[in-house]
Image (cartoon, rainbow, N blue to C red; front, side):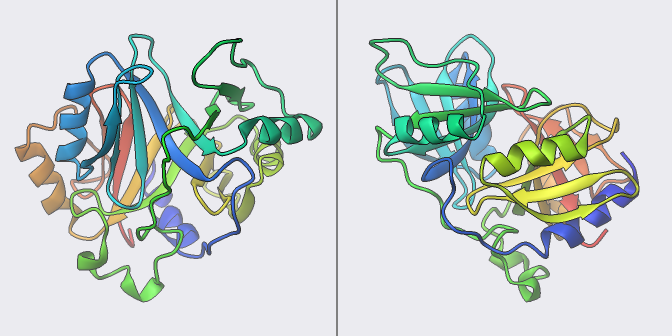
Length: 271
């Protein structure tokens, strides 16, 4: 990954402003399955994500959040990662999306206690819609979506003292224009788009920030955080036995994987 990726990310995200309510639901989260829920929760706590909810119905699950980003984990031996939305009337949302030519690759079966509807982006990115049976709530903390530009240099204002400020849930794409057209159908608005050093765009629906990268510099979805003094915070994470950390153009920018395999980018602001 080239140095310019870090700089364009900062300046593009800085321009984002909040949107109206999402077309997909009321609560957006990063969703992962795990074969060991306790280990996953413990790992995220080290990253500055304390547990905010849990239950054993219909299967063991837990939610962790740093106040800005919500991460939902379900105990399941089958690996899954993606973006999930919870809504109060998911069937109505699904019907409207199908009118907009959105195809659902999997729908709930009769008798399923949790109604889950699955979408695949043109690039294989997982998106799920589900009924909000647990009274889940959208985090309201500071992200790059709503942070004042004057506060970028004030580390005390970061919601997550370990990772920084949530910037985007990004993934690679093969055709930026085709991908943008797809995300627009889901209610996302293009906030910034550039052509060099490679086609890249940031989109938002008011609840989530998505980064689309037409590049071969990485090939996986990644949760991205920005901040100051990243070398110090990264060392603190390493001291907490965070493994598989790889530097990206220096110690101030790294990529690592969670216990389940979710990638995180920790980037230094203003690079």
